[in-house]
Image 1 (cartoon, rainbow, N blue to C red):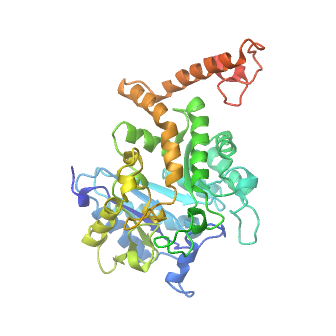
Image 2 (image 1 turned 90 degrees about the horizontal axis):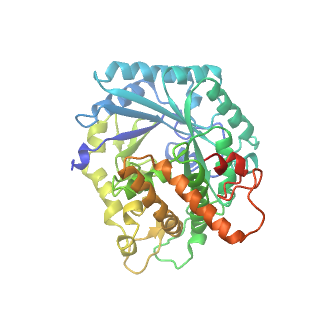
Image 3 (image 1 turned 30 degrees about the horizontal axis):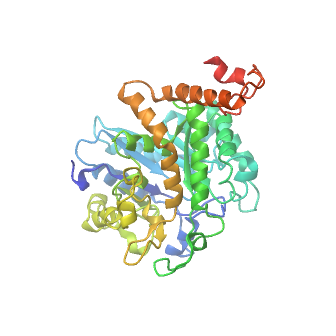
Length: 438
């Protein structure tokens, strides 16, 4: 097994810092303005950009064949296309022969016009676009500075990317408002032609000392935060929609990661890994932090103009940050049947008391437990398909057949199943447009 410092290194770039053209209510990054003061110029300079690109490439472990550059914010498109043309030029200047570079951009989509889309397509950028569901769910918290909803503009940008053949996926934030509408959120994304999805739980911790308080978990977070049980139900409803209809056609990050855990491949996502620490974040001025979710004075590793990314990212301080995820697990996590799938999840959400002299447990634990218990039997079937060198999508026919048999038993001789009847598999479609075709 490679040493920690020999694992792949990822540095998420925040070239505009927290600067954004929207004012989403739950954005955790807007508050980062306080780190640098009101007079800060929120733009990565040419000097810092070149140092970042060069040092990030140089910091990769020996033998790495691909390097992923990810640009987030704030809103990175505020920098304009020319900034990213410079990124491409610098990558071409410094990347060694035989090493491939991939670029991704996380955006709210508001500024994606035709010129942007042509550039993104030309240079094979993967775009992550933020969309929280249909308009009434999305616009609740995702508004511009004038308080106007943004759903229509986001959908317009999605259609524009599709016309230009830009590769993109959707990032949906799950909060108290849309957390009871998994089916609507999922079907909306599918209806837009989106086939790669990730769902991020909104957890806004209040300034409460959870380690000494007996306060219930719900009272430790804002009223926008998704509830633990609510998030579990969301994932379960989402999974049931996906597993009966879309395996192999739609890819959901959390389901892919769970399947990897079941087959023993381990997670590639830091949230579910045993240790983290290989996904750092760089600010617009060259400050490097332990993680995108720990951009604060305590977790500032240094500045790349003073110390190289390689040295900062591989420091003993950062390695301890990585080990803390595993070493600070409470006993209830260590004894959990789903430890291999969860590993305590993200440390930023570990703030609920788990007992005397015990480290805190993840706020979302209740939801994760329900979700993993629900998917366990089906994930085993999917793992069996993969071990037999068959596509995991084969599980859909088996599940549908079982559900139809159960429906027939319950109907007990009632009206026969007709072409326009609701499909007994529970997809919500007509029988003729669903299982009748199989």
